[in-house]
Figure (cartoon, one colour):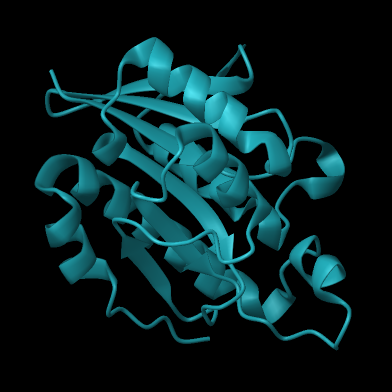
Length: 192
């Protein structure tokens, strides 16, 4: 049976819930809910196990805070013996506009502390990532406030639509592979 590790990045705590930086949590919550799964508290993460047409998905939300996410990813990857190419990390991306999402098989951390930690823990950048564009509409020096802020009212519709498409992208990655999922989702534009 093919086994996959799906990682949603975010920070634990009510003050971070549904912020831009926590979109990884929101996407994997939507995935688990769609497949009638449930998260349980476990070592270094909240964990849900799903089955998808014969494939086994271990879905985690690290509870280590963003900049230590690698500890949880490495622990669960080792525990479940998951191939590096079967890991998919879902995260927020400032460099992408809100209208876009991007699936890639590798790539740098681009200054994202969660990815930096995962890269250090796994010793590679060669693992798939689903980047959820959050845009960069903030005044100079206010990046942290923007990233840790809530979505604007007028953004909520596109965030919901993109969250649902992100769930589909994860399913496609698992069922049809990275290349097919990239072809299907990387050129989508979501209108505000």
